[in-house]
Amino acid sequence: MHTELCDRLGIELPIFAFTHCRDVVVAVSRNGGFGVLGAVGFSPEQLEVELKWIDEHIGDKPYGVDIVIPGKYEGMGEMDPAKLEATLLAAIPAQHRQFAAKLLTEAGVPELPPEERHHQLLGWTAATASPQVDVALKHEKVRLIANALGTPPEDVIERVHESGRLVAALCGSPRQALAHKKAGVDIIIAQGTEGGGHTGEIGSLVLWPQVIDAVAPTPVLAAGGIGSGRQIASALAVGAAGVWTGSLWLAVDEAEAPPAQRQSYFDATSKDTVRSRSVTGKPCRMLKNEWTEAWEKPESPGYLPMPLQGMVTMDMITRTHRYADKAQKVAFNPVGQVVGMINESRSVRAVIQDLVADYVASVERLQNLMPG
Ligand SMILES: Cc1cc2nc3c(=O)[nH]c(=O)nc-3n(C[C@H](O)[C@H](O)[C@H](O)COP(=O)(O)O)c2cc1C
Image 1 (cartoon, helix red, strand yellow):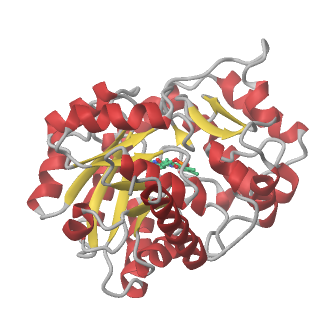
Image 2: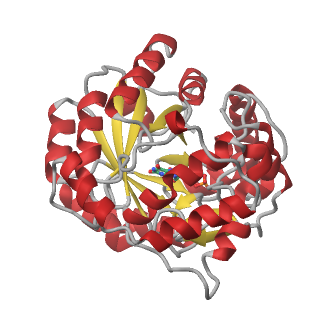
């Protein structure tokens, strides 16, 4: 499964793994793939700590950093993080905070100790993600910066290119893919609706070939629903340069997930996810539960635009992770439909070995279908 992109990035397998856990980044890259650390939840100072740790453990392997600068959000244009946060905080109606807090309290989730409360505004904006890019570019082994939810701003693309690295961006439609290409993005990640986290409406096998044809010869990574080697074979068969995966790494041995959260992935079938705006304001695929359903009911105050809804729910997310054993009915568990294929914890190495073996078996199966 070695593609040209592998040579450009100095990797063995075109298997890209998005994760929030530094241990998973290291394990994926050390096992031949390409680990990508999701930076959205880290302050620039925390991100520096994470990247330093990765550098110390990853050997001579490359890795990536993923930021989130949406194409459109409240307060866009303001580049002073403190001013932006103050303006946004003032715009949050009290009823949204009350509604969110009530759902958790009624579900029996304890309050957070004050010192564990999150920053209100994380990396969801150009003002807060730009310093993350500065941090990432100080680390030599970071070879790729990826952006979610929009085309990265011109200055970000320029800075990354000037430093000799590649820029990737996620998309859910051929139109978004073309906008990325026009802006100078090097790698397009086409994520089908099946995928975990923020996701569009078009299914993977319908989206991938459309994006590949629209932006050719720009390389496209196929994302959304990949959990086996035979799915990797199908992605490469339609012309993808590799695969970009997320859900598959949520319950590996190296991931940080608490036992109750892991169990909720193992128990879920592919029917148990929903695209919900309840956590960030934009449709995000996650496990369906009492929280996601409550935001759809008539008594719900409705969703705020990004990043306001996320500022309301940030502490709620921390609270449901901190008290995971009491919180699964209302917890934030972003995951894709592939959750139905995740039934046990395994090491990253074992997952990658299985992906490769299943891929090889699929290719052989196809070869055996060739006449004579
Ligand atoms: C828990 C979770 C959090 C995610 N957060 C982000 C994010 O911050 N930035 C991003 O680019 N993609 C994010 N994604 C999407 C992944 O990058 C990837 O595109 C997606 O997981 C692929 O689909 P799959 O989950 O079916 O493998 C997230 C996915 C999951 C499961």
